[in-house]
Length: 130
Image 1: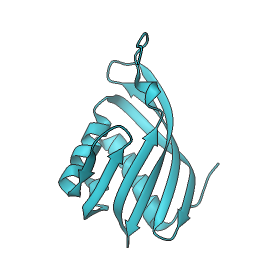
Image 2: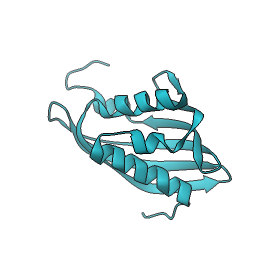
Image 3: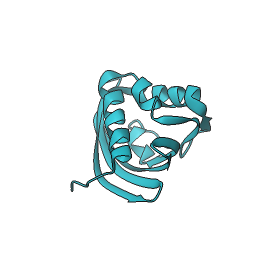
Image 4: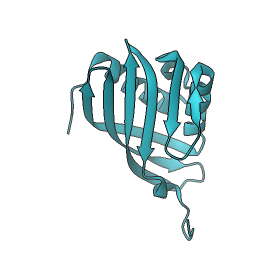
């Protein structure tokens, strides 16, 4: 399902795709406010642009390659919810595919907060009891 997104939501989606293909978070980090917060469901809260850079570097770390397809975008006022599926491989070559949702709050055209929730079970290795 293809969904039309606002310019600022589209800029975020394009920025994430650039991070995934170029392996550099710099263009995406530029979309965040200086005091932005970023969170993954099982990790600490990241605050500010320096932390945003670390957040996206850590995001890239386990992957050999990856590509995210956004299939639903819901927006209301200064908020957007993006539903997505990512497919690629981990550094050891194991294929991976997982789905998730990201919630974004905007301040003007900049991202003020970013929270993401995803199927973390996809990252478990075979035979793991966790």
